[in-house]
Length: 213
Image (cartoon, rainbow, N blue to C red; front, top):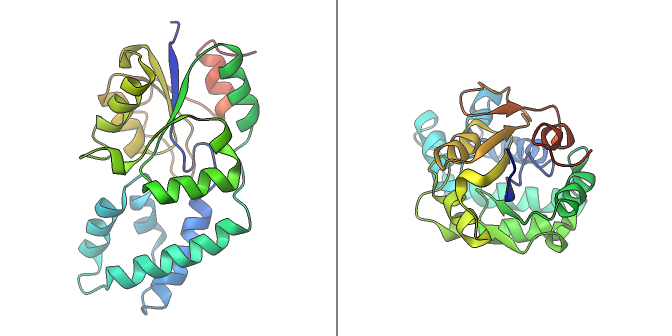
């Protein structure tokens, strides 16, 4: 199948922010006297802040979410200032998409300011004109709305677009929107429920889709 566009998730798919988020989260929770369990953190992967807050409150009813969020953002901002690693093959993958003449977009569960910071630090702001964040939609991932909007902004039919995601939440959103989903798992293995193909990295995913070498 030939595709008309490629839409990428940001965190854990293009850039390695999940490990930094885990580090910052442990610090923020520890300062509230709470040990952030890895299983709980995994439940937050791919979720927007509001959805993540509900999950956290279900585990820790009396937690001060405002304090944790503030501290989490402070610590992660400091970590980002030291640089955010690219995922393997990122720039080659973007070059392959460009060489194929396909428009591309970012579709992220990050807040607008967070997305802008991450893209600035990593240099990705020079590669993408279309960026959809939670600020642009009423229902974030796993709802299909973010991907439907990204496809609309690119001027393509969702069924003709390719999505790259690392998380189950994101893959579910893209699948529900009717995109072909390539999942490149990061911290959590794929269930394969929402992926048309599970790839080891971005380049092998593009190769499966017939894009690039």
